[in-house]
Amino acid sequence: MIFEAANFVFEPPVEVAFARRILIKPSASCSRPYPITTSRETLAAVIAGIKKVSAADILLLEGSSGDEMVHSIYKGLGYDFPHTMLLDVDQCVPVAVENPLSKPFVLTTFWIPNVILSCDFLITIVPFKIVAGQGSFSIRNLLGLLPASKYEQEVKGFRGVEQSLGIENTIADLYFTLPFDLGIIDGRQKFIGAKDHFHGKVEDYGKIFVGTPYEVDSEASDTAGVTTAYLRLIEEVKATQGGSP
Image: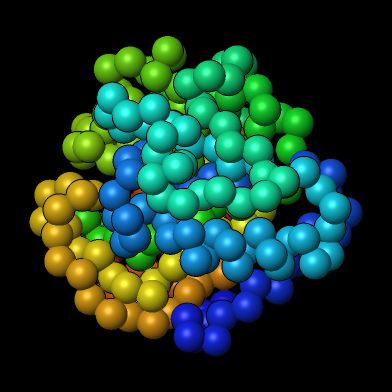
């Protein structure tokens, strides 16, 4: 669903009321403010909405794209929410999770932080970004969950420093391996970058997208009139399986 940003109040899905641990993956690999990273305003609205219906533990999980420590990034962005655990991808124990696809695009197994497996509701929250003419939305944000200890060469690209060869295939694999329950795209503003996720122009947009990660990424791509390559790959898999993404 698409909401007007000026009136946005987060109404959690019913499943949230029964969750014991809820993980939120922001886009916050550096301490630069929104729309480079997920805005504190939107995170606060989501956390407040969760707390209205649930006593679940709330965890934020992110990794750094550079030399900054993740907890310094959290502090710089004002992520100081009470009773919320702030975690670093690279300080968690990595565990191997098998890709369920019979014919993976790239990877048969992913290493992910062990804490994810103990959470029963997963949310990815991102700014509205178009980079190099492609949508960069909630599903791509999952790449930031891959630990540098296991993906040393790739992690800079995964976390937005550069576009890596074959990265769209990796995103599609990760979508099926690590299904998130909810995607939120904060389109209060729209970021348009010619080459990377940190340099570009910003336009007012005034929309917030809420739904499954596939739904919100598709809606954002359609409304922006852009192609999002990983969505096409996901659709191809679903078509062969006879289901919807």
